[in-house]
Length: 358
Image (cartoon, rainbow, N blue to C red; front, top):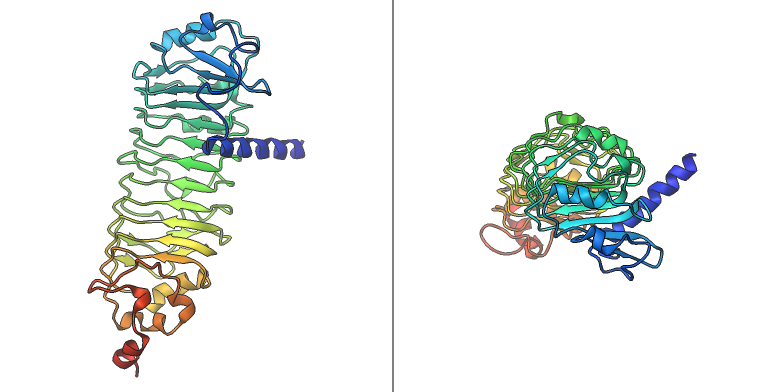
């Protein structure tokens, strides 16, 4: 049983990734519109297509509303298992109510660019065993039933970016690997450091442009597989101790650019891979004291990339310890520059020796 579950999770993750990069069609571009699709007149204005493996893909971007969807999905289909369901740029869709899709199940659901502001917690109940990716981006949601996520047995990707969600509570899922919450203004992590504790396999979290003012200490401390953390375009001023502390040195990309960061405390960032990219560009960082920065740079072991573009760096004696260590010095991106002009990687070691040496 455990092996079968692992196979299902691998398949779900692989197919969700293929969908993300466009390798799986989601917009009616498959090979056939006949059997096993239902009668095209009965499902109009939805369209159906299938691929060579008879996976059904349905595009209902032209429906006039909730009731028309209900009528279409009450029609008897040759098969109730649908690979991809798609609605895009349809302002007639504002509500998804219970039993809307009858007994149809889906692997990929994409309802994007609509007026959707109300979704019943059980509208996709028949997809509990099949759903791998749920994409509800660019809609009008103010609430979402996060508590039902645990019922989806192979869900690996959840996209809720560009909505109006005000809170992100703790979520429970043993399978979720990607959570995208960008551009939900004023988003509050109401359960603090417990927010992601119930997501043991989470690899990517995006909280860009959500008006965060701080990073809750230990927020990522239980995520053994976290690889990508995106916190750019917020209002963070200080990175406190334990703000970023992945337990297994798994972080490949840490983006905290375009904030208002002036202070990074000792022990604020741990858990970086040796080849990590740390982007702190477009902040207000002025100094790079050894006590704070040496532990960060040493995690990246000379092959990582530190991006400090558009920061008012003094590039004074506070950085002397860096230019003395070629391995650390070369981690700066070519564009990382000093406030008075010049790039960090072109600073003169001889001048530092003269000005700062004992």
